[in-house]
Image (cartoon, rainbow, N blue to C red; front, side, top):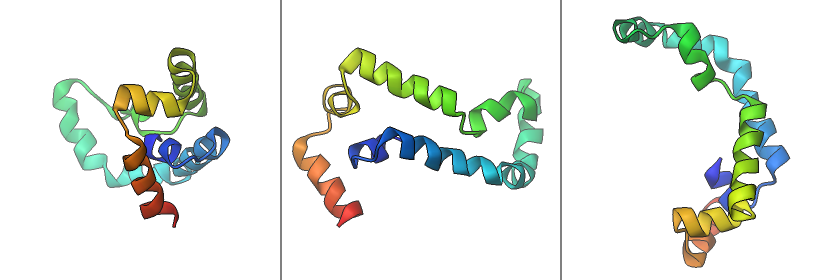
Length: 98
């Protein structure tokens, strides 16, 4: 999500893009079944892990809202909290967008 924000992708597109991953969740869950079985030793099960593995639009929106409320914008968050410089931002855009 942060990379997409750094590239200037709008929030609605980011949420929609992340939500597409839910389409493949059942396949992913079957693929990782062995890992989930091993995590049972730590008291975790598939149902407990599901919220960590799916894209929940409400949580994504809340994250973006938090960035805006604390920093004013995602761009300011990337600069102030992450430390992304203008040069690094330009390099990311050149690498991924051009």
